[in-house]
Length: 95
Image (cartoon, rainbow, N blue to C red):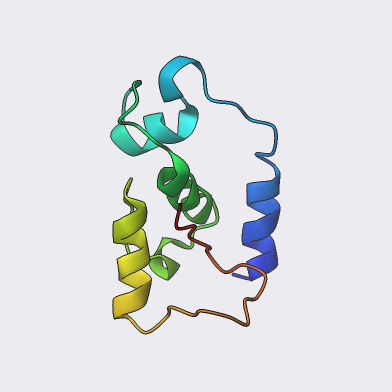
């Protein structure tokens, strides 16, 4: 598995838009049924979906809908970086 493979898969989803109240195929994949509402952000789910589509879930350690859990998984395994990012790195924004 290469970073470029993962990036190419993510790029194929460019332009996809969630329907009303965050109903989207990524959340359906994660939860197993259609969900909608403000509590169903799908940013972390999308990352997990892309890695799963590439048979690379072992690189993100777990499927989760939580950005915090996803970030913590990288941090506790010593895979967290603050600079010198490379193509394929998962980036978390602190809003």
